[in-house]
Image 1 (cartoon, each protein chain N blue to C red):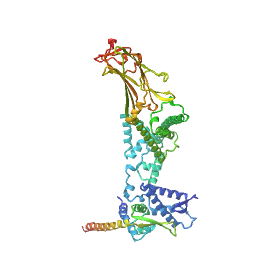
Image 2: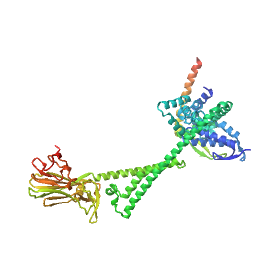
Image 3: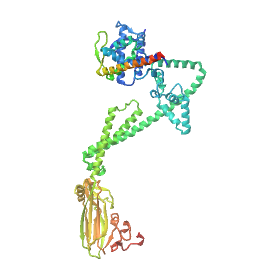
Image 4: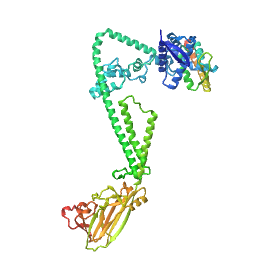
Length: 525
Length: 112
């Protein structure tokens, strides 16, 4: 008694018993394997063959209720020929049937039947068709000489699958997968087993050792798996945190604009102000550019932890890559566009002449507007603060430089040079004009502001104010404490450092600017 | 070296030529081609022919059409294309040359 199976072969319906079905199935699979790799042609050929087999079977089966049995299939196979007879016309017969195929068609497996540890060496030996002993010697040599042998072996042990099915064993040995070969192989295996039983004593002793090694191998592999999962979990964790924080910062950036919280507390990157691209778009671009790699990392971690998670399909990953590249390009464009806003320098110079009595001593002071900025440290630096002047946001900068030079005539005068940057010279000059800088002359005191105010959008421009005092010969100045961090590289005959000039008197002489009351230890010439 | 292989290889070389020649006489479906070749003892098993037909079809030498059959599933009728005709012509002259050449060589051998 046999179960029957209903099959559709070449568009025709057949009752076929189980054994015959298995034979037919194996036959068709073996043919498919022996055909060349071109899938299009392969399917068509298999269809043709199935159609022909169904035709041959219909000739024998007259009654619809009759069941196709193994004999019928064997008769068909006899007419159609063995799988190797289907070899593509391009290849010659003898090569596929009687010669061992070249190493390229072989697959690398571990040989579980011929193993000392994991069968890696014998697998390689099959692959390169050399004797196993040479591969083993090579591994030992690798271990002794450079010490990499053992980790390489363990890695390969984990990575290489063991040849378990007969088809895999044939592939490992580089023999074509045909029914003949499979049968031969199985017979050989049965012989081996019976031989092993005959030499029971020997194999028992060996299998004890083998069992131990197998267990050891399993332990090592499971340890590696656990470590791998751990790494995967860490990857996932890190990626998730980065993504979350990115999302949060993205949202908060958006909500700041929505709610209208003043952004005094947050230093938002430069191009949020000056770029022609709207802020929200830059936010999204930035999120994509940074977030996508982490998303990939997250999925990678997920895949390590759970093998059920599928990889992104090809179109999906290509789309993601495309979006990512666009985001990067967008950011690059923004960067270029932004940097071009500072491409040119522009300046505005104002000059004022004073009348002083020649013997008077000028006192130079720097003041700060405490109403505007109470926390100013009263020193020159390139940082900015945002302040409100009559409810209008302004930039409060302290980059003010003070220099002293000789006047070319008899009167003293002051030059204020305001500098800014812009996309072109005109806009740079315009920006420079928008810089507000003030000073006062009261009696013999020159009171300079230690700050200037400029447009809020100039926060990432390199703006500064240079104050140059031109003195006629014979005039003396006194540097008060307040100018300490503002005077910049003032030339004097004794080459006294800027920081040593405060609280001292200097006179403009024929030779140059000269200290009249300095200790000689301050001289640097 | 087995005599069967050499024989098979010799036959295989001219198999394409034979298939094209059969189709020149008229369109035929696979079983008809097989029957002709088998009766001429050009092939022993049928399997050889399928990859060959597909290859010829992919090379544009053959095309096919489906035709209903009274006794079974629809049949694939192979047709010689224009390219196939030219190809066959070429093969014809090659074959004649080959026959002459082989004749010449073997005759010489026999004379000695």
